[in-house]
Amino acid sequence: MPPDIEAIAEQVFIALADPSRRGILAALASGGPATATDLAGRLPITRQAIAKHLALLAEAGLVTAEPGERRRVRYRLRSAPMQVAQQFLAALARDWDGRLDALKDHLGR
Amino acid sequence: MGFPDRIERTVEIAHPPAKVWAALTTAEGLGTWFGHQATIDLRPGGSAQLTWKSGDKADMRIERIEEPTVFGFTWHIYGLPDDDPRRTYVEFILEPAGAGTRLTVVESGFAQLPEDAYRKAYDGNTEGWASELGELVEYLNAA
Image (cartoon, helix red, strand yellow):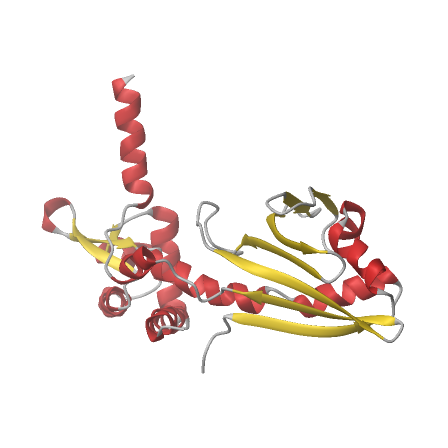
């Protein structure tokens, strides 16, 4: 497996390991692009902490900064790295053990 | 560390290959142990569909049929968008073992990533709903 895939997935999992960052990603997913100030108004996190988390999320490629109104920077969710991480989750979630048990049960063991 | 690209399991089943083959390749069999309901057009290139009471469904494309030893299909990677072209390949291999069957299932391709997905994942331009909604507005305005 190319190491890049794993690096991308690892950054996604690191980002998701923190509840504040999950909150920020969830807010961007449900409400669309937002400024750090918007997010501070909606989440129980200080604006300073939000700025720090947004920097990490941008580094991981999970959000991208874009010019917003009145020269404020807006952050937008990027789904591409999530899809890479999802491939790995899919492998873990396949559950062939459970299915093969069900097959045995079906055939009467 | 490392993520699996390939999942492999082997089980011993106390029934002959013909019976296991039927459970794997008929709508009746698949709709009992695998899904809650199934349809199957058993030929290479044919399609099969599993549905569950939860509303989930899986579409399979049949790739290999060598009765009663090999049954292979590809299907969508769960969790990726419906239009994502990536699929994993699942192969069931049946070998006689005494009066029963040794059944091996191999699913591979979890780590595949088309060339453009690398680019997208690293630095690609984000399109998404905002631009799709923009296109919808343009389309409606033009109508």
